[in-house]
Length: 260
Image (tube, rainbow, N blue to C red; front, side):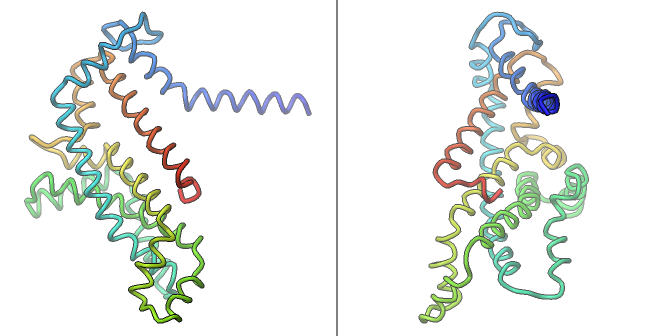
């Protein structure tokens, strides 16, 4: 029995190292004094963080990613909340087919979605790049918002809503005054998950960006094609730390893990 326990502990440690190891390497190389990104790092410096924050294209593409993420996430929520509500509250024959249809952007590989959207938005409709990028991100975020909000609605008793209706409130009023306030934690969880997914997206953004319009992950890829210094490690460390702070803060305040 003890031997089995040791094997389980060893396997757990190996899995942990496999999953966390790359992030630790990125974090350590961000402070290295080496001129190229290699492990183990040498020395200690903050110069790579200063350089990462001083590059104008990183700052510009950060705001493109941020604004696109906010706009696409908000749109995906506006569309996803009523869809999730209808799917949970009502029964109809085509429900399994509709569920599959709404989940398809999360099932189909991102490269295929990006290529399909490129053909439609750019080649067929001649749409501006920034609009195509926004619509593409909205499409891939939609199933995430539907799933998270649906999970929140399943935890919310329909009896509370029915009580409001029986007291004279319309379905429309009860939805906004009773349902939404009681699933706000799920809405926040959906917003955070969708925004992080949008901000870090590469496959779809790779096809939908173009001259003068790029997201931060795409700009980081372009930079690495020309340079291999720890600048990208420093920038990645900043993004990881910000993401962890946002997720952990939301978890402490709202307990979002039960919805995702």
